Image 1 (cartoon, rainbow, N blue to C red):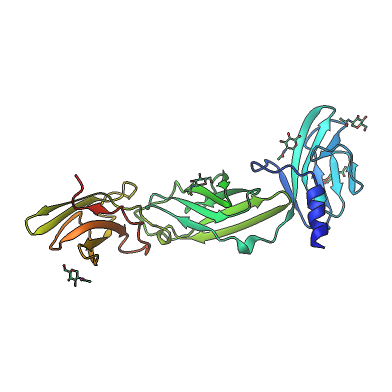
Image 2: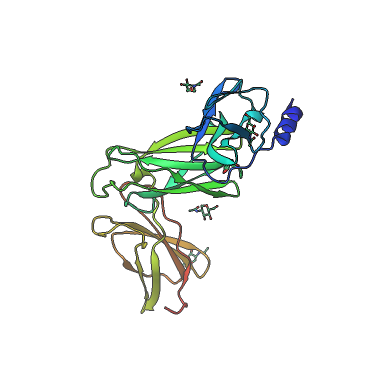
Length: 290
Ligand SMILES: *[C@@H]1O[C@H](CO)[C@@H](O)[C@H](O)[C@H]1NC(C)=O
Ligand SMILES: *[C@@H]1O[C@H](CO)[C@@H](O)[C@H](O)[C@H]1NC(C)=O
Ligand SMILES: *[C@@H]1O[C@H](CO)[C@@H](O)[C@H](O)[C@H]1NC(C)=O
Ligand SMILES: *[C@@H]1O[C@H](CO)[C@@H](O)[C@H](O)[C@H]1NC(C)=O
Ligand SMILES: *[C@@H]1O[C@H](CO)[C@@H](O)[C@H](O)[C@H]1NC(C)=O
């Protein structure tokens, strides 16, 4: 059974999709699908994946082409022509059942209303996504970038207000097409739950008498003003004997400690809402030139 299916799939001359087709139609397996040619030309011809010979289960009538009992070999690129002139193209796929398996992960660097999401997929898939904004309006479709089995997209809600309480969740709608099937899924979440800052920057340290003095700056991507969008910082010191010492400070950008640390690194997070710590900054050696 599997071998047969594989054979059928291999024999089907389906062009791999490289971008989301402007016009597509989703049908159910073994049900009829009507494809319409958007034209006023009186005489048209159809091709399926570039093949001119009509298959037995295709019935052309006027500007309609009915696919009787959609199956996998009948999926693909239906183009209608007036002689050599291409009039219209519809990509026909079978509705898929992979929705539940797709694990979308979304992250925002701050509270500007922009974020990015990533999810796994097959290399031959194409995806697009759009966002329902916090004011209820729906954003444009954005094609997803992909390769190596991982897809991603960056979305932004221009009506997002970083200063107000976020009352309604953002809603992301994802559509995907493979050579033969379609999937559609949506997720909703609050931006505050997906914030993960970039690492703090410009970490410097120097010895002042017995004390170690450190200074740093918030991530460049972090929302201003700092007085409103405070950060909790996690400092990690590595001592001469390899022991690590932790320190937490909030809302400041320098500190002094009394340890004989060899090197230090820093990470940060929003102290109030998002529980995710930023990635660590690189280790900063005490001896390194400033
Ligand atoms: C479908 O075929 C037509 C004609 O060959 C081509 O112009 C078009 O790009 C194809 N569309 C897709 C989505 O492959
Ligand atoms: C073509 O299809 C449309 C939509 O399915 C239908 O309304 C129309 O009557 C059809 N036309 C013909 C000539 O079959
Ligand atoms: C379109 O179909 C007509 C007959 O209906 C045929 O004469 C013509 O050669 C066809 N054209 C193409 C490009 O297949
Ligand atoms: C998104 O995917 C593209 C293509 O695979 C990759 O080059 C890029 O680094 C990815 N971006 C993110 C933020 O993951
Ligand atoms: C490492 O040194 C610190 C103080 O310099 C000391 O408190 C700690 O016990 C030492 N740890 C080990 C494993 O020797």
